[in-house]
Image (cartoon, rainbow over the protein chains, first blue to last red):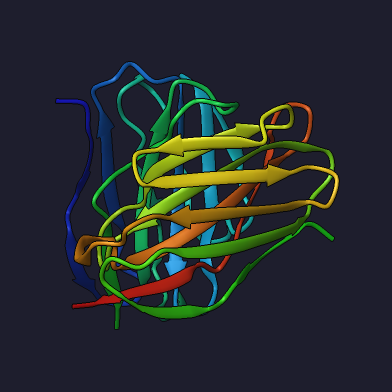
Length: 113
Length: 113
């Protein structure tokens, strides 16, 4: 089954404690991206990757890092989480960034206290 | 400024009725427009993707239209079902390489029995 898998689904952590949210896709997609969704603000892109070892900033990259060492994986790293990073996070993948369907993961709800 | 505005913010209709959701955008240069359905707490699911040259596209009971001249799109839902209750998000990509992705804030649709 074609899917994008995020882990964990839920996470509560403390300010400053480094964490990683994993994202994996099984569709051999080149394009992957991370979004955060906040009430009243909708979805905003954090980072994206056009292919292995190619990443770029989206609209709200501050406080986040990503890596793309393998085509299937695109982890999101919070080196020093802060309460304003409490949000619902989604990973997505598509064959390319142009006119192909994007598949989203099931989401990770992160709370930073 | 690139913007995507959706209306109405929320809508309640009776099961079996039709409805139309609106999306207006001020994005240039236009690359493509997508409609997504997002159930509460889940990742968005792609409904349609339209490029500049397409002015209508259907996916079952969902029909999207695009008027590139007036920069307007609509999503029409026919014979609504309880499972159509969700948020519907309009997303516009801009730039020759679709490098900019702008999300609308969504329309929250509730179907009543």
